[in-house]
Amino acid sequence: MTVTKAPAPSANHCSRDLREWLTHLSATDRLAVAKPGLGLKHELAAVSQRLERDKAVLFPSPDGHAVPVAANLLASRGWIGDCLGVSEDDVIGRYQDAVRNPMPWVEIDRGPVQDVIHRDVDINAQLPVPTHNELDSGPYIAAGLMISRNPTNGIQNVSIHRCQISGKDRIGVLLLPRHTWTYAQLAEEAGEALEVAIVIGVDPASLLASQAIVPLDFDEMEIAGAFHGAPVEMVKCQTNNVRVPARAEIVLEGRVLPGVAEPEGPFGEFPQYYGRRANRHVIQVDAITHRKNPIFHTIVGGGMEHLLLGGLPREATLLETLQRNDPSVLDVHLSRGGVCRYHLVVKIRKKQEGQAKNIMMGAFAGHYDIKQVTVVDEDVNIHDGEAVEWAVATRFQADRDLLVVGNTQSSKLDPTTTDDGVGAKMGLDATIPLAADEFTFTVIQVPGAGDIDLDKVLDDDDAAAAIIAGDNRGE
Ligand code: MN
Image 1 (cartoon, rainbow, N blue to C red):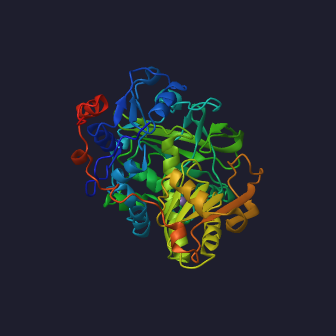
Image 2: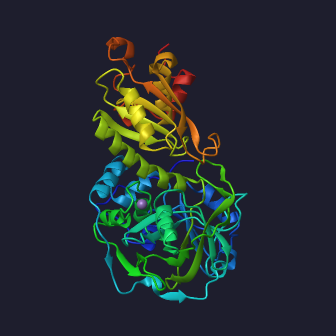
């Protein structure tokens, strides 16, 4: 299926909320609407998956529920460029710029996200929460920005975690040992619950900001502000001290309970396998607030939107790290076949022999998810899997250009790693040897093929018929 092409980027086009983005998608023929009443269990995800590289989709009255669901907000890198106001090629540079120049948010008194307040919480009655993959344990909030506060200094963190609906006001949540987990540990050591908010239905730039690989106590909402070119307006939750985007659609206010662990999972994850069931953190939900006619956003686990959201922020961070070590690095790409996490392609302007292997080791150290690094020269299009394979086929020899490192820390969601996440790394140097003679690696080309005007040189179908019939031969 071909990707619906994004329009040429307009300067500073950055939707302020989910509705502005849906309006923009609709105006550019990228928003489909399902017939009312499709099923929340599997049917909604099935339709989303079929359209995932082509169109966003709105589901009115899913299972008769009053609240509609939106899916596929980002279908390609071109769409990400569109939402950040740059071309596809400038997306990484724009992301790096926003991380280097964060913009703090401002607090306002009230916002539409608190137009309706439910203190008597019943999640599945109040919100249309879908079930996506076959063996998922049940309905999951999959696209909620979890905002938490560091209990020692009040700085907020933003990230996305899978949230299983475990009861009418209870959520089971997977916290990997990163920032939200650290805040929950700090709260638990003080014998307290961690105040959180789960924010559903924001603009795509805020979703991208939430996935930044930045240090602890770096508030990701400030990256969203940088994308918007204006501070994000936030309001204080009704039942705790967390601040949430005023223009969001829906917020669940709650607390991560100290010392409580209950079963969560399985859930279909980005490697296209299930994260298994285990005892995990529990959130007690104290209130749900939302706009007057809210829209619920979901991300189908393992789908295109899930992969794009995880991949691009990692590319921006890895490029920053690799360029700091070696300015010969020009660009990086986490390929779709490598689940936008595991397989990295690095483009370099090679200056010295051996350089590629140093770069591989830098990438392995840059993020534990990186499993395979392929280093290519600057003439290779790293976003084209065929071009990268061609470089490996014609510029790589396994006995001298392969690097394997065993027993390293790797992704726990990769089914070939051990339970404690130990696996191996592989690097392929597909760059041309500097000492090679020029002719050996001269790439063939037909002069003029790239810029010839076919309308000027091609005749019509009648001319073909005449030639085949022999009409024009002077015999
Ligand atoms: Mn963080």
